[in-house]
Image 1 (cartoon, rainbow, N blue to C red):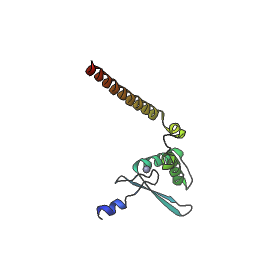
Image 2: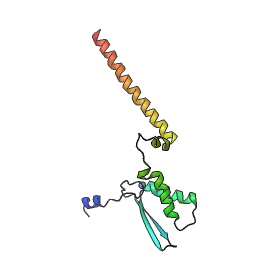
Image 3: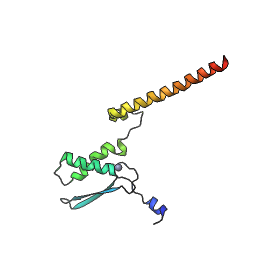
Image 4: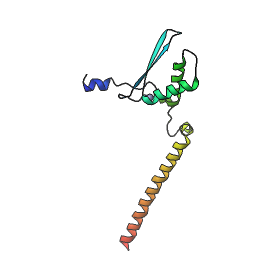
Length: 128
Ligand SMILES: [Zn+2]
């Protein structure tokens, strides 16, 4: 397979939608009660999240994998992402991410002010 064909056949994660490299995992759910199986191709992160959800929920239904994938998709899926202008974006941010974001805003504001101060100081030094 040439590189272009391989690029075309890259798989996206079924939950978060990001392209997967060699790290992609396949999650195969055999729902014996209905006789149907389902396969999800997941990235490593989503795969870990789904297996964790399976252990946490301890579901006993044949649809347990389907349910776990649904739960993880609602948390990490593309539809779970809001724009920065949406109030929900800030609600779903963890406290740590909020802190990190605030620190960055302060750091950028500080650097901008420091540069402005130096420009003014240089201007004053040159003029006088
Ligand atoms: Zn994913």
